[in-house]
Image 1 (cartoon, rainbow, N blue to C red):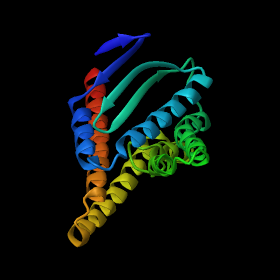
Image 2 (image 1 turned 90 degrees about the vertical axis):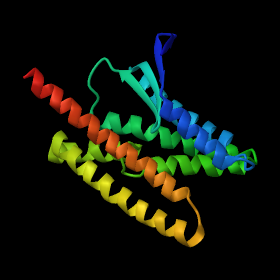
Image 3 (image 1 turned 120 degrees about the horizontal axis):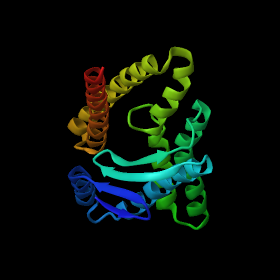
Length: 205
């Protein structure tokens, strides 16, 4: 951990592992730098929206499931405001894609759209799951909304794992299987963290 400009940074071993796998898969193709640029712009979009709502970035964690930013707000965000922050990342990717296409950088344009669209999937820990939670919470309550969020995530990830297995068997293509495995880890990690938080809360009581 190190501190710069009052922002704490944490980089896990899992992040380096995922980056190494991506580098290995990208060898000779050259898509990784453009993909990383699209991801950075995506996170900057989230940060810009958070700052506009008065948020202050406290920590950036680079983990096996991507970048996670801890932002402190002067007040609790409404569900609509939280949705705005969640959608700011994909919107930034659309804007980057338009600029890249105009500049004849078609690979960057395609990757940026792909990053934005991928993050709109309603699967934990992607932005789509956050938007889903914000829309379900006023109707079902936060706890029931989170349970439904996890159920939907598990069903979709299970389908992607099955489809990825079929594609691997038929075409020897590992891309979807690896992606779905990454998403599965995100779902399991979220569920595990939730279980530990609940256990600690009961101990305090």
